[in-house]
Amino acid sequence: MRKKFTEKQIYILDVAEELIAKQGYEGTSVRDICSKAGINVAMISYYFGSKEKMMSYLYQYRVLKTRENFSEFADTIKDGKPEMQMKEIIKYIVGQLFKYNYFHGFVTQELRHTDSVKNELLDFYQLFVRKLDDVIKKGVASGVFTFTPKPEDVLTTIIGSTLFVIRNRNFYEMYVPNKDEETYAKEAEKKVRMNLLLSIFAILGYAAD
Image 1 (cartoon, helix red, strand yellow):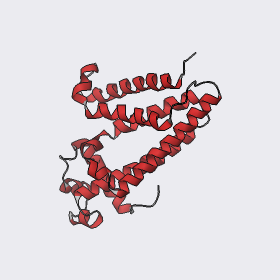
Image 2: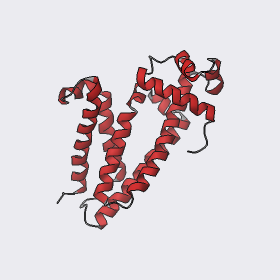
Image 3: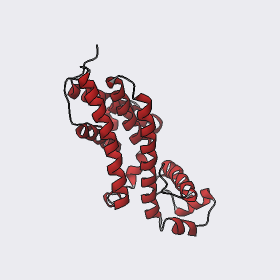
Image 4: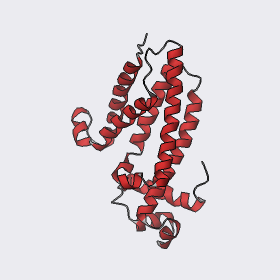
């Protein structure tokens, strides 16, 4: 990971993320974070400025870590067939959005558009677009894919569909069989992933043998 955070900041951010994942943003206080991290409350101000600013740091940190993980993931599938790579990329993106779905409870439009976070997201999205473009072109060249949709449109479809489900559980859970808290996310993620596979492969003109 690029050197953007000190070891102490990373430690505090990891603790904060763990608590927020369990308790939610509103249910996690600065004192909770400090108690778990074994630090003084003043350290949050010293390292981040405020709880709100710490969230901006945390979002940026998560984007950086996920970007690093995706680069490693992309390297592991680079020799696979285009259809396999596309399937794995869809699975990866959907999985990451569901895994870190708690971010959508506190990441406001204002926070997402601060310069630091905005730039990190832009670089991150472009990384996905370049990989999708590479897979689409290889698929067309090999005759596996018939059509060449724009990679940015494919990414928009994947992220947009997944975020809609995450943000509208009261609607989507009507169509998911297992509705208890423990299994809902797993079943919803599976349903979204399967729908995206059908949609994306359709616009690529791919038909399995």
